Image (cartoon, rainbow, N blue to C red; front, side, top):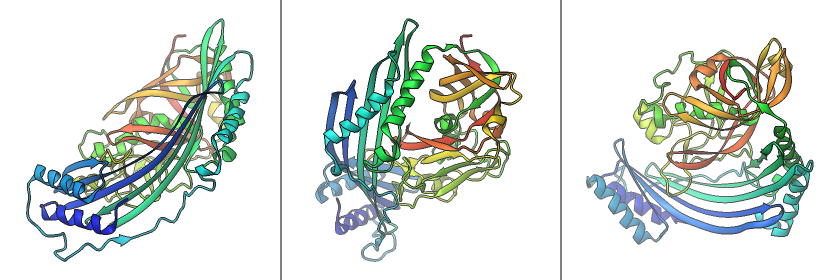
Length: 464
């Protein structure tokens, strides 16, 4: 993508124009999409995108530009344009010596694929997806099945004026099954979407028939669901994608993107008790082959396991370079971006509530009337306060300690910082699930997760 001498000249040129810190990011991404509807190919596309971004710091002021022309002449012109935005100081380089000493490291291949995309052709892929389609048709109520396969192979390079020269390769594969059921009561959908930082071995690790059947069963179950109850009540939230509530309504409040600007209600609360003793909340970019893992972040820093909340006490934020400058907190390898068209900001990687020691059965005991939110859907969050409302994709009434009839149309309404104080029991069955997170630096792959857990009270919005 870029050779060392070009990167060195760009960075030296930026520093000579007065920048305090200069960073060059280059990227090449190969992508492939395959979309089927009832096994008929609706989309089959592939492409390669490459480009570079240059980021300059003048104190805590940041300027960023990107281009898909990687010639040295063009990149020098981009650097000049950026420098003019902040004026020129005429300094030579950060250390006053000739040349930059790039400290090279090679990725260890911690998340390298076993079966590359080139190992199989489109026919093989369609055969695997057909397994999901067939399994999703659990009854005559299933009228349509849509499946989308995503493949990404991203190579990046980060070089900066502190001598960092790091490369990383992120190979990610995901397929998503949507089953549509219909009867005289209307339409319902079921969904399953496994994804990992692996190649085509995803189909061995996450069997298509298993996930297709799960999507079909969910759609069929919802056809018979009654309107959800409404009002404050105890709620048991299922594992895996149940963690999306705390990702959106808590995790974003712990990114220095909001903490440094003091727009988060959790600003300046390090060391304070902000959750119940049952809550330990972690953001871990090192989980092997997890959807949100990488060896280096998009600022060239090694990723790490960051304990954000330990037994209810706030221990750390998620910190990028700019956030570190603004707050004084150490960087946590959390600088991420969608691609070269975005500057990095502090973002989550794989974020989850740690397992507890309660049995799943014990969570339901003693609940006279409540809601079991087995699977969560999407929702909305108010930035800064963590106020949220999330749809329950698959829910059931809890009555006298037992899970009973399915319900539809349930919404969970609350505030993230208040809800984590009401978590009274956490089971041992933590599981993560993949998703995409949108924020200032674009849409990026993340995992959310948790075990089954009991919240003593949440307002449920429903029709019943």
